Amino acid sequence: MKSWHPDKPYNDLPLLPPKAEVETKEVLKACVRARAALAELKQAAELIPNQAILINTIPTLEAQASSEIENIVTTTDRLFRYSEASHEAQADPPTREALRYRRALRTGYMRIRERPLSTATALDICSTIKNVQMEIRKIPGTALQNDSTGKIIYTPPVGEPKLRELLANWERFIHDEEDGLDPLVRMAVMHYQFEAIHPFTDGNGRTGRILNVLYLIEKELLDLPVLYLSRHIIRNKIDYYRLLQEVTTKGNWTDWLIYILNGVAETSSWTTSKIRAIRHLKQIATDYIKRAEPQIYSHELIEQIFEQPYCRISNIVDAGLAKRQTASTYLRRLADIGVLFEAKVGREKLFVHPALHALLTSESNEVEPYTPPPELDVDLSRLLRTKS
Image 1 (tube, rainbow, N blue to C red):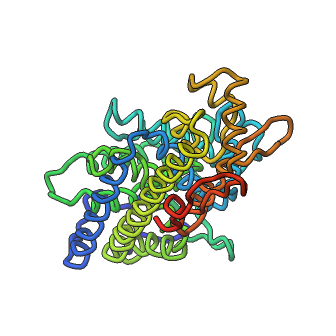
Image 2: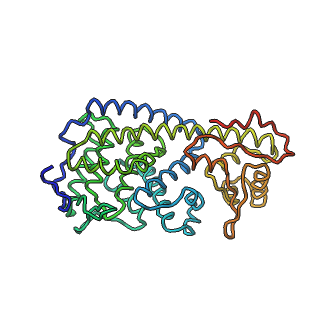
Image 3: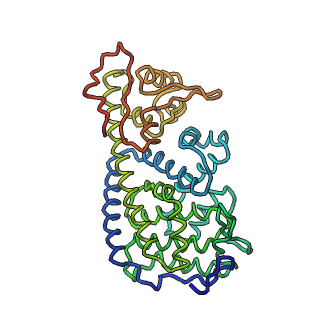
């Protein structure tokens, strides 16, 4: 890497594909494990008929973690509370920015149904995240610094023509399969290259991580944007930046690729377990509500209270399940039997689903039992098993 120096623009960033051998024995071994875990995740997601349950929940966890990687810190609780567009303005700035990440992921998911991944996709995603129309960098001055020391550790290429040349090469690499690279290896390579090009003044890391998930969907390795890869990155953040840097400084592709592939495997397995736990909790809730409140039970009502851990009366109304007064009665009766918890936030009432909230925000996949009032004659020994 003789042409690279941290405080000089890296206009000699090598084009793709890498000249080095990337599919080493160690990489391919990690790739097999990642492929198997990803296939299991895809299958688990297919077993939940109401896709809104996954699209509203797992991407929220991803949004929180991916934003935290960039030191934009909020909580999943705030994200769920303000997740509806009509309530987003009430959130604090970090929460609003993380919510825009989730929106960008959804937007990208819809766009790749219409057209392949491209620089235009990246522009759309970054513009949504930053809430302004982003453009390819036109002026110099962008440099990445060490958060602790302030020392410059990398200066990306400069000049719009150079950036567009590199992005055009990046696009060709994504879609040119003549080299026979496994799609997971290609994803890891394209992620490094996008971060090294650093085409925008801000939002590059988050944009790049969304592109990873969209690429897997484009290649039909996933059907939904439910890979929670930022969980692995936030837990191994030092290694993430170190290994990105080592590709630049040492040409060390192997360790970077294994890091990403291990992340795909680990987070796929974790997310699969989380999805299974959600299904298990949903079945418990169905059986419990059928017996405790058969007069209000409906499949559609169960689906609604599982789409996210905060439910409003308006959600029931908007779903066409009941008019406002009846919807209020439904939610209060669910609160009476311990499925929901009524809370007042400002002027509005929220109905929290504590068991679902705990499941989504905990590392554990244990299911918290619903607690009925003492007089409720419900056989809990069969219904409230605590393990998924």
